[in-house]
Image (tube, rainbow, N blue to C red; front, side, top):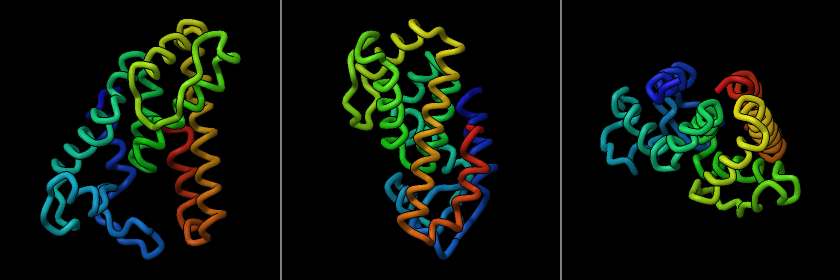
Length: 182
């Protein structure tokens, strides 16, 4: 799937302008918060954010900057999952999930060195991903890695709802729309 297709699907899931009272992030349009839009240089009301601007933000801040495009060169389904998770939880959280999963799957360092879960995809993370896929096989390895990423994501959603009861308003949708479908 191309980044354009991933962005289209994400925007479809996120919808237009939303201002849910329980959302700590405040109002959004196409899933983009006002704070993120402002940091990207958008100066108008978030309710008026053009779709093209949202697409540019997703491409720059949630695909290119976290280097998920480089993950896509190796494991497209994993990159799609990271993009979706990053858009919902932040790219650093998604990258940390990848680093944690790869470290847990390295058979005590036999296949490649442990990673420092710093939330940044860099040469060590990409090398570990390459090694994991070489050892486990591209197709099967990607499937198992996706399961690990979704397990981490699901656990985080549950923890968010447990720690802040207002997040229970979102838990069903998170699990229905984010787990099992990037």
